[in-house]
Length: 100
Image (cartoon, rainbow, N blue to C red; front, side, top):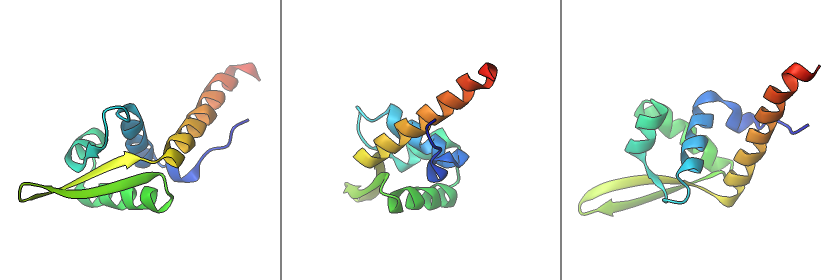
């Protein structure tokens, strides 16, 4: 059986990872988009993104659009792999419930 990822398993981080994974072909998500998707406060989202970045799962990109600062987030290769493994764990957990 696949193993859970304790970093990703936290509900808000799971939402963040799912959103970034779903949009991986489009590119990095802006902080404001991620905040709306995850329904998080600025501070809470920033804290969880920092945890994911420290784990090597997310890359934080900072630049400017005109004079406005912009923060975006994208999954790293390690983040994509970790998310897929965690989803496999959840899938096995759900599908295995009725088999016992």
